[in-house]
Length: 386
Image 1 (tube, rainbow, N blue to C red):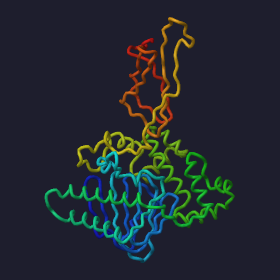
Image 2: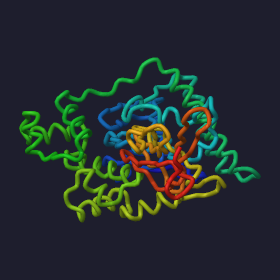
Image 3: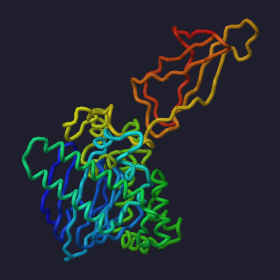
């Protein structure tokens, strides 16, 4: 792939204007990244593999990819093409969201690997190309407020893409993948922490392992082993982001060898699991030009938030008599996909009758997904009887 221009747009955004026949080496293999991606094909033809779908692109087609979606691009040999590609940190546009406009809607609010392709009509092509060229022209000019105009023009692009996305009547059909291979892919995705050896898959799906390996690579462009490793590393990233330690992430993502897990994590993520945790904790980013660019204000998709519910209410004595003092407790469980952060007070109130009210408000530790904590009424070390 020959790059006509590569622009660092600041605020965590990067634009490539590509032209040529040879792809980047890293684009040849399945991968994922923490940035979102917009790919627009100006001329030529390419093929995108995203999760378990394949999209064939012709001029005027656009691909949108969320952070974490596994994907790869395939170029036809000796066929020139031209494209625009923008990668951006989702924390930036998220700061411009309102209660009626989510700039990340088309990226975040859909299943992985679905509705990634948008085919544009002639008038829409002119509008999108106009915005891309405007970003280029602003970058190549030198005037007061240049950086701000780059950002606002990019926001214009996101608004327009979301309008196109919401007006799509039906999802673009992906290219054909045999049902047997789809079944294998879906099984792998749902059972990353289980045995996924070729021998097991052969017996599970009654497919000769040699045929399975050849057919899988034919339709996905990668081997079963490479696909499983990548998917397990992505799952381990999600677990680390939710508060699990490195050993837990290793085991729960299906790795039986800790050293092998760390080696593969470094190879794919380009940092060790411990460095990844530190990066998540620090909320560090490449570019902190926007003042609110920090961990407290970063964009977190709703499906990664904690969800706290009361699962049980307890009291003692268990069979109180009239006149007894009763101490209440509540069991709170995190049923969401993200942790309740350390330092945030988790409280629950108890109200008995018209006047008696007491609280438990001293729990400030992290509460990971699936974990529960018992909160006892307090305002003193031993709680306040009601």
